[in-house]
Image 1 (cartoon, rainbow, N blue to C red):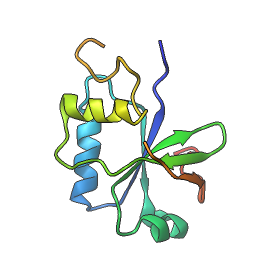
Image 2 (cartoon, rainbow, N blue to C red):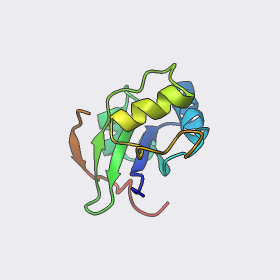
Image 3 (spheres, rainbow, N blue to C red):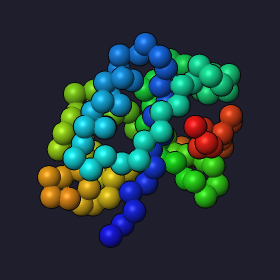
Image 4 (cartoon, rainbow, N blue to C red):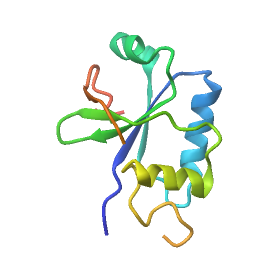
Length: 116
């Protein structure tokens, strides 16, 4: 069985779009591993993502880098969100169901992949 990739959700406190995306991701029947990163806690992340949160990214734990995913349409949920995640390589082929992208590479500033 393929291992689901880890996801990073670049977010900030009080962002209703960020909170909504996190809720929809966690509500999937087989949610992918998710780490929420507050961009306001790191000046480099704030500079990069300030006006674009929420940003979803695939984490590469091997080298502390990540690949930003395209913007998640805000009305996707349930099976449609799971299909979107699968199309972008963020969900295993059989995950996010009842039975079971273009990206840019970044180096970790402030190590969002590190220990919580």
